[in-house]
Length: 370
Ligand SMILES: [Zn+2]
Ligand SMILES: [Zn+2]
Image 1 (cartoon, rainbow, N blue to C red):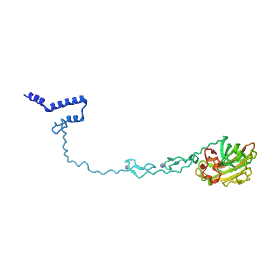
Image 2 (cartoon, protein in one colour; image 1 turned 180 degrees about the horizontal axis):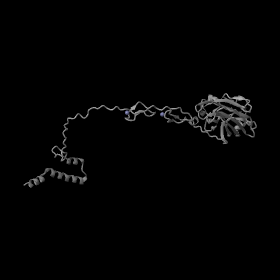
Image 3 (cartoon, helix red, strand yellow; image 1 turned 90 degrees about the horizontal axis):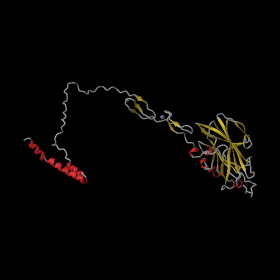
Image 4 (cartoon, rainbow, N blue to C red; image 1 turned 45 degrees about the horizontal axis):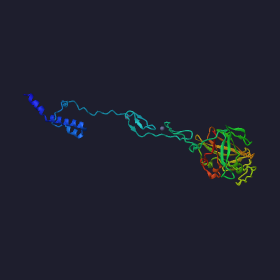
């Protein structure tokens, strides 16, 4: 008797029959092309309140223990925290090493002043903050391109006709560094005596430029030179120099060239016409022009001296050679003087340029006295 109702119930179970039917429909639908989410939702039966309780035993919360002891959280006197302060540094604020508490701000670096030789460093922690200052020559991409005994083309305009260009052959024939010199037989045949000065040294060079092309013979040539500071191209008005040499054309050239129309400023002892825009003095007993200039070197100012003189060989078989010597007396170790030969088209008048990079071009020649 007990089996029958069970069987009956089982067979008659509407849920079981319906589920089976839907499952079959589902399998059919799947076979025919897939089951849609909608069908799935129809099949899915959300649990209801009438569902059997989970078989897991209910969790019984134990009753709080009855106790007569004192409450657990009696405030006790907090032990006083003594901060272990680590003093502030350039980059970290004052910090407790025990609890991490921060007090105030980092100190920040104390930068030293950078110059051309030394970087800026923090005076407190020594960290390098910025590299040495970029020298002006590098800033303006003026590259030293001459070496001793290297012959280079020197492009410049002609004296009589600045629209015409002549090309000379320039060579630094001698370069030396010395504390002093009893006698230097200079290239012009004069004997120079370079005097000693404490903390200074002389840097001496000789130069020759040979002109022998057609334009040089017929229209003459112009030479422009200057001594610049590799590190600092300061205001030209307190710096070296600029001179012009305006030789007359070759009188033996045929046909005879026209006379030099340029105004003669002064004739010097070497048969060349010089135009000096700096206050260079001719010093008769030394046989040189001389002026002073200032360089800053490793934090100090030095009053330096430059001397120079030049002469032309004169025209001979279509050639004319410019002989030139110059020396600078600079602090020992100073390697910043750069002897520059530039196209006279950029220096017909003193006002033509203020800083040398305005006069320099791709043909400018540079010899660094280093
Ligand atoms: Zn602390
Ligand atoms: Zn620092």
